Image (cartoon, rainbow, N blue to C red; front, side, top):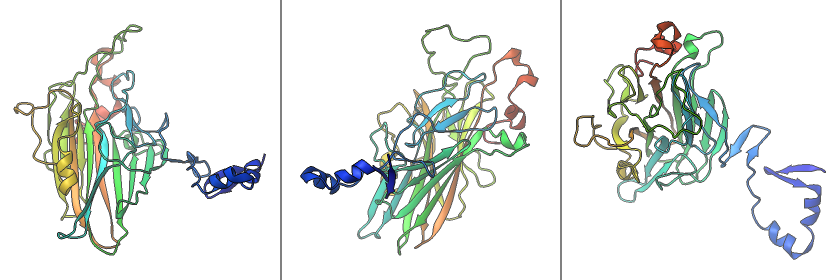
Length: 350
């Protein structure tokens, strides 16, 4: 059988003969060819969910997986690692744009994924190129006046354990204005507390067929990161006093406006979305554990950076998610701790 590639489709020799036979074949010829699930010559997956993706996380630190449809899943941060989580709907990125000026504004906000568990608007197309420890996602969605690319990765430096054991992942959003007019834009990165349920010891494996333990979130609090060296973000309290997560950004331009807030990942819809869809902001300061608005179920937070991009300009907006996992095993012997715990006293320092 002969395979011929035409504009990204695969047609057999028999299929080519069929294009000239009868009215049905002529009718089918007028339809656009189906998009192939993957470009195997370049290793790119087109607008499909697959079972496996790129694991983001340093050596021995745990990780989460970014799938080809933009879904975050399979977080394994326990020490020792227990079963990975399922999909984490509260972990996603979104882009907002506004063009046209104050008299005739055109506003769009989309989740950078093919599906949203909260019913939020999503991208129609997604091109995924990923091999651990990195993944690149391109969003060729014509609704944006931008080209949008997200690169997620963890450092991996040959022969250097210290430089390859960062407990976290970086997200670089490259946005290029393809129009001849300025574009207001905002990038938001949301994350839920990935440490939920991650407790246990080497000697306490669950019995076969035992029910899953309930989520354990420590004091379930999220607080603003102490501003230092230009970083802005949130810290999540984990299980145990010395564990937690940090979600942060480092705006490359002084005119960038950073907003952040907390929300409950088990809500029907993120409470900050309407404001983000309207003007690219995500709301007020985060609430703490002692606030009357403290999160009751599964703590989540979102950080957004907003700026204006001149005609044909581009910008790289960096974000990071870092963690310090609880240590449980072998009688708390310091020499048996994950190496990343010896390098970084808390999640934000990573």
